[in-house]
Length: 84
Length: 189
Image 1 (cartoon, helix red, strand yellow):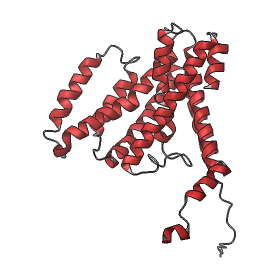
Image 2 (cartoon, helix red, strand yellow; image 1 turned 120 degrees about the horizontal axis):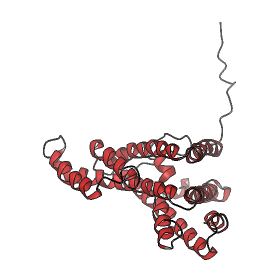
Image 3 (tube, chains in turn purple, green; image 1 turned 180 degrees about the vertical axis):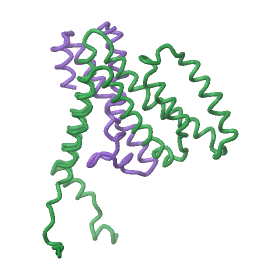
Image 4 (tube, chains in turn purple, cyan; image 1 turned 90 degrees about the vertical axis):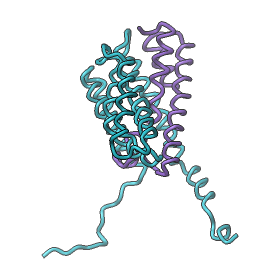
């Protein structure tokens, strides 16, 4: 969230309030994505989605929290006319 | 003649070290792909989405309805590129084909007793994995500063993941786990 706030508001040059809003969206959606995959694994009664990445489990275990944020970031940035 | 000395063994790296090393390699590959330009990003999407879809098949089997690969992979690939490379292909047409063709196939293929559940799991998996990659590609190709938007969305998530890893591996967290473990006395109760 802090990284997004700094990056978006300073580098891209958008108002800080938009940076805070998008940062919050990233934080919440990343958490939701993590919980969704955790729930799937709990239902499937497995600890990791696979063992492809040593120490991490599977690719899906690493991607779980980054699956949802781009959707919200894209729509927020489009609605705020920050990108087109 | 060689002798094997079991006492001389290489020190095993700690789980945290393995996690940091493999995570750094994974992140380096992702950033290299993003820096390589649009074709690097396409390659990254194909590799990561392909592996994630493959893992989803195993996960869906554990959840009770194995997602069919013949539905999951093409549909996942379509959703991943539906806003960019496959923009000209109508989403309604693909969904209609997935509905009619997918459910019709389960009239004849083995495992048709669970057909509806498996079809739904295939569609859900394709959406769950394909759609986010579509939005990464849309972010990347957006103007102005699409590259910066993509990179910072990934970095912010990685920061969150790193924070959760620190919490998970912290000594305080380990103490909590130990305290939750059943003691011999509690197991007798």
